[in-house]
Image 1 (cartoon, rainbow, N blue to C red):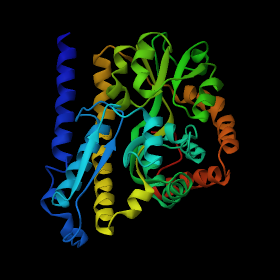
Image 2 (cartoon, one colour; image 1 turned 90 degrees about the vertical axis):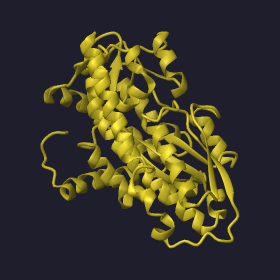
Image 3 (cartoon, rainbow, N blue to C red; image 1 turned 120 degrees about the vertical axis):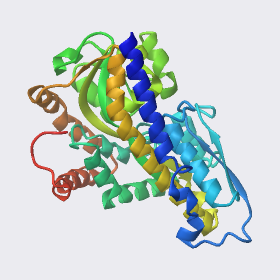
Image 4 (cartoon, rainbow, N blue to C red; image 1 turned 180 degrees about the vertical axis):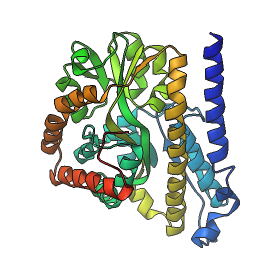
Length: 370
């Protein structure tokens, strides 16, 4: 018990340090006004107020809320108080799907959502979910920060009326947890009920592995696992921490099957109607909140694994031979499934090509995934 407490304290100290070091309040980014950096003159502009909503716990040590707080602080500070951001955390205004509808209708101006929820209104986002495509998080960030990612986000804006203000990894790679048995190979998935997001390709992958997929809203995930609606789920380590999944799950298998992303979206009509000076501040605030979140998830991926062990979760890293079994069972059929699910299948070819090209640009070798 004592060692568990010590590990917990170390984890909390590391995360607190991350927030202190990387918060826009404590960095020189706040000390040097963005008005100077962007050469903006706000004199004569009317003050505005808007709402930024997300469904995650209002905990400043977790990436979703921490990034939203960073966004609010930055935008309000550099606008000299002419922009007020009202945060609505914890699902006060609804779950991910409901928030998207509110944003599309212009009722809420800015929201935090994920590729899972986005897939219900923009199927092409499923190209993010090609199994075992990326070697590590930096590989995926490189691809989506590049031209392909920006083209994808612009296509989404034109199709949905939602503009990407910022994006970051949703904790990194998704892996399986459950409270029944350790998963080493696809055979161990048989008979399990696994909670997934409402992404058809995620459902397809789970069923290809022999398990039953069930969709449960993010805000009901903990209860669904605790009451046995699902035996397990799949998320990245920082997300497991955010939802306290470790309290109701015994096993974690780090198969890292999908990369997952979080996006900060704005109603495009509202955004385009803003003065260009306010647009510039909001976009820069989005860039900086993305930096905060990416640094925080990177730290939590490392510290969180040790913390989960301290909470009694048994963590298994599949061998390369076992990983190959997962790839063989899912890569080809799920990629073909996505090809048929998206509005334009060239997105699939493009992302595979970009991922391959990025290996060379990053100087990666051809051996295994990180």
